[in-house]
Image 1 (cartoon, rainbow, N blue to C red):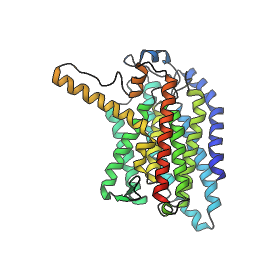
Image 2: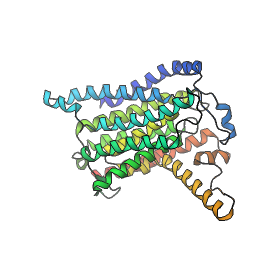
Image 3: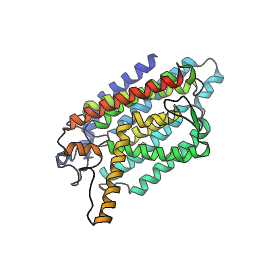
Image 4: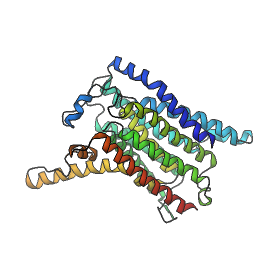
Length: 356
C-alpha cells in the first residue's frame, strides 16, 4: 500500500520540478499551440502557448510506474521462478503501457508535424485513424488471449462472453476513447482535472479487485497492483501538470498527452475487466465525442433536407457550447470535475456490488 501513495507523490514532485524548464525550452523553440479562427474567439489570445507538455506527463508516468511496480513485485516474489513471470505477457501492465504509449506516439507525431514542421493541419485524419486502429487491434488481440473475452455487466454481477467479437469491439473502443480524450482537451485544465478524478477511480477499482472475494480470480496480484500504481501515478502527474495548465494555462498537453491519457483510460478498463465503467468514469469524454457526432450528423441532415445546415449546439464539443452560453472556463472545468467525481463514485459502488 505504501507504493500507492509514494508513486503519485513522486510523480507530482517530478512534474513540479520538470515543467518550468520544459515551458522555457518550448517557448525558446517556438513550439506553440495553433488556434483556429473557427473556434471560440476568446481562445485566440492563447496562440503560441507552449504545447506538447503531455510528453512529460507520459514519460514521468511510465518511469515512475515501472520503478514502483518493480519494487512492489520484488516484495511479492518468493523465488526466481516467480520473478521470471514479471516479464511475461500475462502481466497486465505491459498491455496497458503498450496501448497508452502507442496512442501517445500517434499524438506526438501529430503535434510534431504541427508545432515543429509548422504544418498546421498535422496528420491527416485517415493517418491518425489508421494508427489508432493498428494500436487498438494489437492491444485487443493481446487482451483476448491474456485477459479474456468476458466483460462484466454493470450492477448485475454477471459476465458476458463476447468471443471473437471482443477483438473488433475493443479495437473500436480504443479508437473512440483516444479521440474522445483528445476532443475533451479544449479548455485550460479541463482534461487534466477530469484525469485526476478518473485515474483515482480506476486506481481504487484496481485495489478493490485485490480485496473483494469475487474479483480475485479475474486478475493476478501482480497485474492488479501494477495497474493501481499506474493509475495513481498518472493522477499524480496530472495534478502536477495542472499547476501549469489551469486557467490561464502556461502550457498545453497537446495530442501527445490527451491520447496517452485516453490510452490509459481504455487500457485500465480492459485489464480490470470493467469496460462498461468507461461510460461512467469517462462520461464527460464520451459526451465530447457524442456531441461532435450529433452536431455533424444533424448539420448534414438539415442541409440535405432544407438546403441550410442547422446546429444542435452553438459549438462542439459540448464544452465550447457551455462557453458560448456565457460560462467561464473555470466554471466548466469545475462542473466537469464534479460530474466525473459523482459518476466515478457510482462506478466504484457498482464494483463493490459485483464482487462483494
